[in-house]
Each structure stands twice: as C-alpha cells, then as structure tokens.
Amino acid sequence: MEIDAIKKKVLEDVDPETRRKKKKEMRIQRLIVTLQFLGIAAVVVLIFYILMGISTVDGNSMYPTLHDKDIVVYNRRCKEYKAGDIVAIARPSGEDYVKRVIAVAGDMVNIQDGKVYVNGEEVRYDGEIGTTEKKSSKITYPLRVGDKEVFVLGDNREVSRDSREIGTVKVSDIEGKIEWYMGRP
Image (cartoon, rainbow, N blue to C red):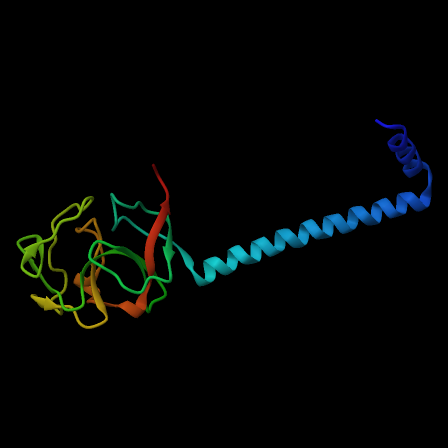
C-alpha cells in the first residue's frame, strides 16, 4: 500500500466525519445495487408476462415426450400453429392443457382402426404411444377443423383428454407454443 492509502485508512478508522461519509457512500452503493437488481427482476417478469409463459404438465397425457410435473415455457407471441407443434391451452375450467396440434383449420381429421388420418393420410409423431380411439359419441368423424381452430391430441393416446373429448380448440384459447421444457432427463 502507498503511504497515502495507509493514511486514508487510519483517518477513516479514527475520524468520525470520515467514517460517517464512508458509511453514507456504502449505503448509497447498496441502494444502487438493490435498485439495479429490482430493475433486472422487473424486466424479466415483464418479458415473461408479455412474451413468454410458464405452465406445468399435469398427468401422463404427453408421455413419453413430456412427463407429469414437467415445467414448460411457451411463446405467447406465436399465433399461427402447424401440425406437430406442442402448445399450452387455457381451458374454460381454468386448467392448462399441454397437447400436440394434429390438424389446423380446413384439415379433415378421421380416427379409424386405432389410427389418426389427416386429409386422408395417416399421421404419426415421434413419442406417440398407444392406439388412437374415438372417445366421445358427440364428436363424429370425419371432422373438418373449423376456421381459427386446431385439433389436438396427447402423445399418450390411451390416457389423454384431448380433442376426441373436448372437440376442436380455438386458436384464441392457446396460450402459446412450447419452446422449452424442464423435467426428468
């Protein structure tokens, strides 16, 4: 240390006025750091509120692609969905569903012999398990997906509650497209 630094340190330890100034500087520095932290936290919360959202997978309807209690992050800004996209859906009951889009507006969906057909062609996705059976007598096939609607299924077809029971989903009910998930390896 230089002699001036040593003198300053000794003066801070002895002189009450210098000690008071140093404490005031430290309080100001702590306040600045706290405000910076709160600012960063506010920006992160705003980004998630406006651009992104978080949901939790409830149950095994998306197994093996997603597991029960996996946390998913979705993009709220996505408003156009295509077959194969995994989406978070807000249901009127307040529940959030995480499902895969199978068909979009104008597509013709048919379920026959344990398989799904879209526009006459069988549709399969990696991770899909079980046979796809009709679940509700209220929904008749072939079914044309209406304007601004999608047809969704869970990957675990035998346990999923999806468009086979609840019907097509309005695009306005979709919270966003799943971009990332965190859960079991």
